[in-house]
Each structure stands twice: as structure tokens, then as C-alpha cells.
Length: 251
Image 1 (tube, one colour):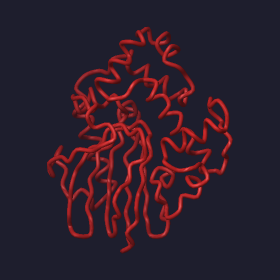
Image 2 (cartoon, one colour):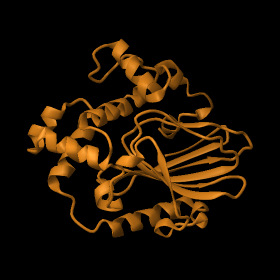
Image 3 (cartoon, rainbow, N blue to C red):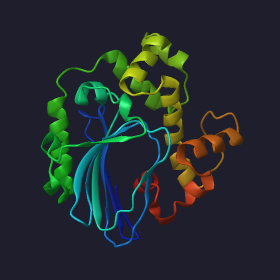
């Protein structure tokens, strides 16, 4: 998807089937103006790898873990940001290390991380192809079927499920699943399910539908959850003034 709003350019590309279990999307945001626009990323259950360049020629690569609340990105006039959004299973199979310590925070990486450089920010389509090639090369072993099925069930349910239901369907005890989630991601399975449910409600909020479609107890519960994860009421999220909520602008 490619959109340009008020001189902010957005583009998002889904990976092919060979990477769909690992990568959710590759996306970019460009600010073509001198305006200092604040950006907000709300929880979506993903691990993000960013390449960023600002007007002062500053360049950095950083990774962020699972977010449990809104993350405010600083104003970025005349800037470019490319990102790879990974499903959490990438912690084990691509990064090969726990990202639990990165919950609600980020880590700056070397400027040549994975062979990327500032030049990769010149052409998004080429960056997309390079990113996919790198990730494919790093996927050195087959994903465990039980873990693959677990995440598939979470996403298919849109967060309308329970720890107990998932445990039964994948024949994996809830205690072991929670141990896995806390060790690799820094959040419990229940917390992750709630994040996915919130993330799946963004489309209805963008349409202006403020009555919960997913399994929230009632509208009050829905509003509380939106404020918890986005930091604002549903009506504010829907307006998305100045395109500050990045995920809504990418939809």
C-alpha cells in the first residue's frame, strides 16, 4: 500500500509466503516537509528493525521489542524511516536471542548491522528485496510446528481466544507457553493476546466504529483498553490528526 498525506509518504509491502511466518511487513515513512511531526506507534505485537536518517544526515539502525503502550517517536523533519516488522517468533529463529529486555524500549545497533547502510534508504523496493534475502538467509532451521501453530491460532483468532484454549489446541501446557513468552518476549501470553485484540480493533476505529466488535466485555471495557494501549480515547485515535498514529496511516 502506498499513500501520501500532507507530504508524509507511507508505503507497506507484505512478504511472500516463504517469509509470512517470520515477517509481517516491510514499510517506510518519509517526511518531505520541514515540519516537526511527532509520530506514535501503538502496540501491535511485533518486533521492529528500523533504519532512520534525519535532516542533519544522522543515520542509525535500531530494534524495538514488544510494546505494551504507545511509543512516541521524536519530530522528524526531512527524514526517512524504513522498517521490517517481525512476528515474535523471529526472536528465536532470526535474531537468535531473547528480546525480553527490549519490551517498551529500543536498542541502537551498529550502522552496518546485517550489511545495511544509509544508502539502503534511497530505494524502498530495493530495500524490501534486500531485507527479504537477508531474513531468508538467517532462517537456518525449520520452525517448530507447535510454535508456528500457536502464533497462527493467535492471529486467526484476532485475540478472541484464551490461554487455555490455545494450550489445548497446540498440546502445550499454559505454564510452558508463558515461560516461553516471558523468556523470549518479556510479556505473558495473556498480555500478548490482549495486544493482538487491540491491534485488530484499529481498522474499525479508523472507520469510526466505536462499538467493540471483538470480545470486550462492553463499550466501557473497550474504551479503557484503547486508552491503555494508545494513550488516547477511541475518538482521538479515529481522527489521527497530522497522521501521527503511524499504523493507522499505513492502513
